Image (cartoon, rainbow, N blue to C red; front, side):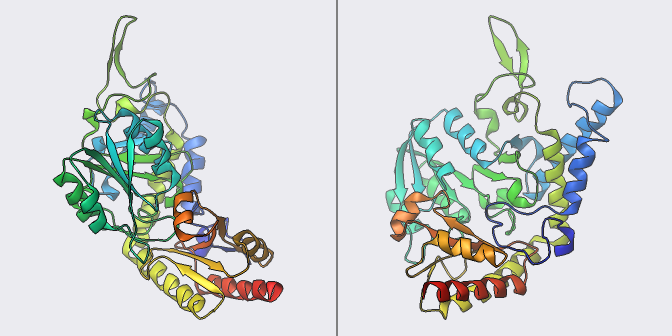
Length: 381
């Protein structure tokens, strides 16, 4: 698949897909055409091209809804998962206690704090998964929300979402899932998962930046979060009434081009098959973990069944130094706290090095990383 991705230049080993995925030519073409040849505004113009663009925008909504097993009216376009979580945190009518976990991304911590929720924290299991047994003991009827990552962006830890949903619902709470790392590599059927809200970003799913998705079948129960054009029914200076969901949450001119690009990304992923992508990434993760486990200088983090992501540390070497030396060898990884500072504190490290895979990675990328780490050892040895 590497030839589909013009950003993957020869000799460059991109292992930072958990941060953002490279874009296939099909997505680039779709966005270029939407920005140029086909461009017009949506939902407003009475001329033909505007009508055609409106149809394409709403077709993108239907396409993405089908990809996650949803109804189209339950899918709202947002700027990304961060905005989706903020929307729920600020708009939810029952602000109370929210149960998060130690491994959450900052975008699933800070919005709840800013919106005035009382935050409780679920610990992790020994291998770095959200401890649902502990969650069961922590949850009380005072909790109105549980917000967990489907897959950790640092550890690759997968969550049993169906069980988490059951635990939340037993005490009358709702479950929000951060699906950013799951949607590109795991089959997602929101109805089967049983969650109440599911959020993900487009750019990690081989799509454009600046667009994401909030799914919920409870959107009509939430008041608008932002006001402006498009999200209204009728406006007077005395009173404004609002459009039904999802329109009420898409104030202003939407991310037209980006939504169409995201639909093209979904087409690309489904043409390969999400199960095939998952199996491919599992094989690469296993090869890398096995190779790193043989190095006495390396500490591995996360479970054996981590999904597409491998985090590690090297004794006596800061992850930033690892990343810099690897870059000299044409290997791009992530080094830092990965927007998960509470997890770093739990691990007892300031940062980790992280390699994350996509559909375009192969054994050569793993070999280049291992060779690069050998060079790091020689330099710091």
